[in-house]
Image 1 (cartoon, rainbow, N blue to C red):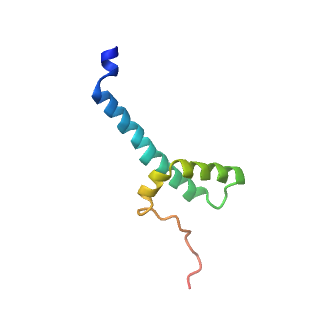
Image 2: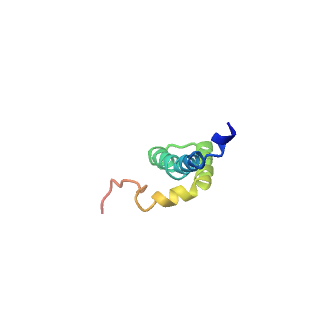
Image 3: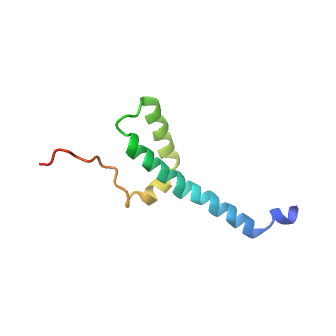
Length: 77
């Protein structure tokens, strides 16, 4: 059992899984949530989202050049 815990491939795999969750999966989920609920959020939901944005800021910065959260304007002019 101790030999399995000292396996460098298992350690590398664990780091990759954790970084993928931290830098990709949760930030993309936050972008999706904010994009769908921005105008209808309550104050406690907004506070929770702001806390998660602070916590997952590095992943949000990675995707920010590629995603657009601006509102779709109906009045052109």
